[in-house]
Length: 363
Image 1 (tube, one colour):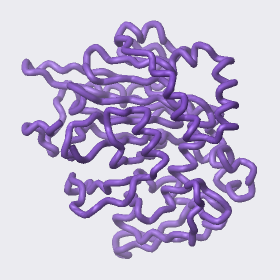
Image 2 (image 1 turned 90 degrees about the horizontal axis):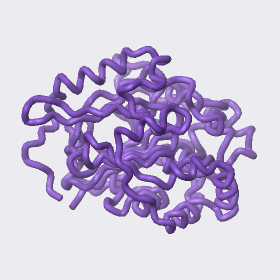
Image 3 (image 1 turned 60 degrees about the vertical axis):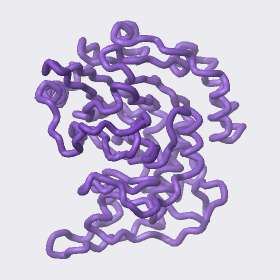
Image 4 (image 1 turned 120 degrees about the vertical axis):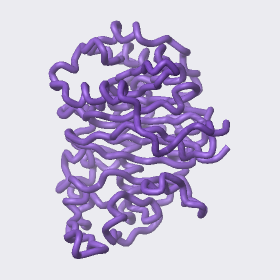
């Protein structure tokens, strides 16, 4: 599983792949629906047409259900089980894996984490608990001294009355002083959450400037999230992750993930608003094989095999597409009975796309 020697972390993407990226970046949002060049596996938007671009791989093993039972409380899983019975087609999508024929190794798990409670639980853990852990750095740490509220461990890892979140009403007065006052102004918590926060690292703390992982030992990867990823995708180990946060108008430029010391597959899980995901490889003849996929909340992408080192990026986030059951977060979730704590951040998730990108660092 060694990294190919001809991979350059600083290389520029091929023009043909950039052209597809720019096309979808500029395309009118209304034209995305049923677009012939956009793979969309949603049952409500060209599911049958999308199947022409992919191959059915396998039915996921039934014991994967136990993964979610362990991740959630048993009572919650019983609720989601009832939801599945009311939507047979959604269940079919959840239990199916597809491979993009043009890019062998690019696997799609449509709505792999579809159920309301699964997605809300993951948001709670990542944005309440893990964002509040000083060991997990963000893009804001580069220019600001980030202040944290006093917190104590909550036992099972979930947010509780003894653990503070940046979304909590008690954090309303937090202000982050700039490291260089001549360059940046102080940052309020509202500015941090609404505009400035773009990414957070878990486990291995990736250095975006040097394009490498530090040689020092990384902080622990959140155990429950790691267990979920490792068991859903047993062909890789969750050792590092980048949590990207987008709003409509935000993009992620074309790049390749080449800093890991092995070529184990990458796993990406989407939450919130739809995102257009471009992925492509340049052939020896200069021709490019490019796939554009509309990723919806709960969808998972695996980049393995030939597609492991494909160029990929997000040219646009589609506004107004966050599922109804997520729009009210953080008032919705494991703590939805504690409205007073999160009232000021009501519907924060309505205009957001969250993407959890997980990778294995070492062979």
